[in-house]
Length: 77
Image 1 (cartoon, one colour):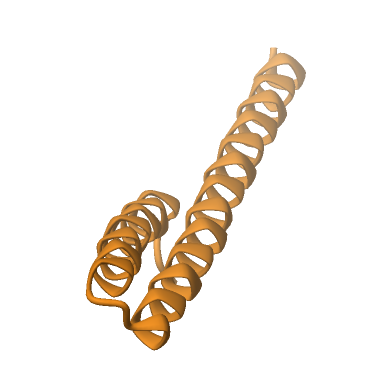
Image 2: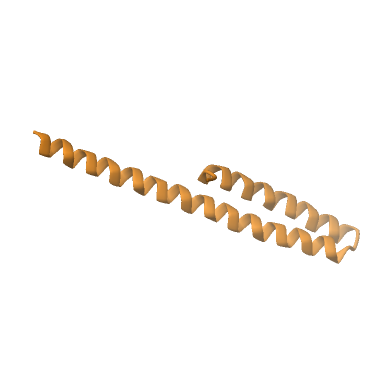
């Protein structure tokens, strides 16, 4: 399973590379390359968002585990 940070970095890379392709396609009047760049940017945004969601879920799970461990420690007293 990829980490949230790994997904965020891959998403950012895809957005940058996609933007370069889009601008290149525009510069050389290649609509196909321009579209390819736009699609890669969109994919990058989605992958980056998935990474953010994974990190949020991981943080919540850690928070719940800490609360559960605190309760267990209270019961042991």
